[in-house]
Amino acid sequence: MPAISTAPDFSASRARVAHALDALCDRRLPAIGAPVGDAMRYSITGEGKRLRAVLVMLTYEACGGSGDVSPLAAAVEVVHAYSLVHDDLPCMDDDDLRRGRPTVHKAFGVPVATAAGMAMVPLAAQAAWEATRSLGLDADTSSEIVRVLMRSSGAGGMIGGQLLDLEGEGQNLSYDQLERVHRCKTGALIEASVEIGARAARANDADLEALKRYGRCIGLAFQIADDVLDVTATSDELGKTAGKDLAFQKSTYPALLGIDGAIARAEALVQEGCAALADAGVLTPSLMATARYIVARRS
Image (cartoon, rainbow, N blue to C red; front, side, top):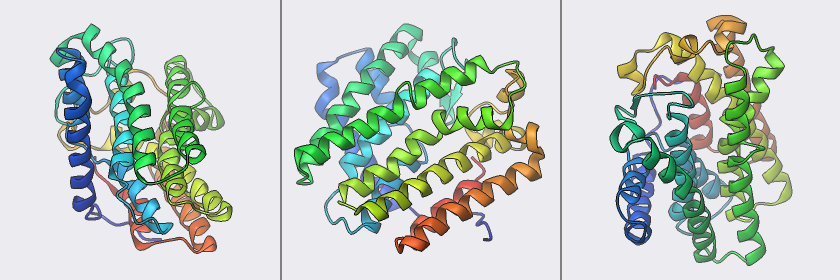
């Protein structure tokens, strides 16, 4: 499966998500007020790939969904934004740059950034519930979607993976240990994005399982690509500080497998994920292009 060198054109989907995020901020953040509300808006509406939100939309469409799923995709993006705020804090990865501008704690201070990140979690849960109900989903399906979103960001997903990542600094993790870290830290929310789109479109069980496998594969491939970029791309290309993994003595896929080996592993995961969708008959050109882009991107 050859890689593509440029991003698929998802500008229309990203524009819809940006509109939904702006509307959510306008509706909910005034009640929170400054400075926490301002910090939340700064993070939520900042420029980004919106990959997780786009995956919600592409999966929803692949499964036959016909409503406006952008508010639900926006709820997933809020969770991702929260993770970046806390990931950048001095007690975590201690980064000054994110998406080409100062991180939230650099712009607003550590206490405000910490509070803003915490406030994004219930905001995302509420937004996801409201979005699913607006799509006409029943209460059980809506509840399951919110559970998937919260589970992927909790102790068994993103937060747990971040803790494992911090504990692994300065240690030589095995491949299995490293994969466990990143299936939680990075992969869980990407897999959840695919599952949420499928559930919102009322996908059948067979299609749902194939899509979850695709999400697991591309979620891990995304992290492997990130590890490679950390040692091959510049800070200007990344929009964040390059070389952080080495500085923090993290175990990485390039360190374990070499750069070529890491790239080969990411490409194999993309092939596995797309094959699962093809076997189920739900592989669309957009889902294939997104998977390929994940390992070919430069940021």
